[in-house]
Image (cartoon, rainbow, N blue to C red; front, side):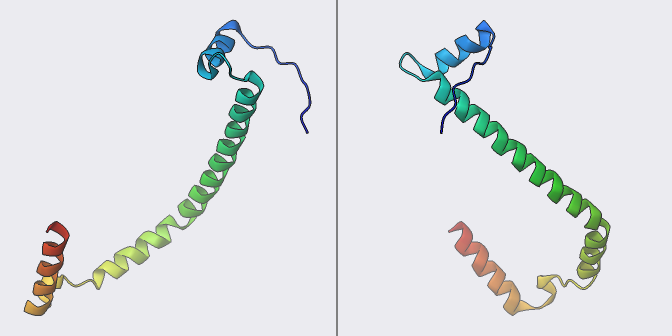
Length: 96
């Protein structure tokens, strides 16, 4: 359901809207789409901030775990000719 409302906009903003929608555009539809997009972006920003806080809370532990795993990493070229041949084949296929 649509509800009629009144909004005051500056001449500059109104001219920009008119230029964007063209001669046969609908200001109300344009403004509604813009407001919906704004709210969508606000929710996304909130989710991103929440996710960033979670990552930050666990960053030290994750960094330590990664460093620990890297301590056990083996350079594939230390594994011998068979592995080197596989890597060379993969690189050749990726570029060829």
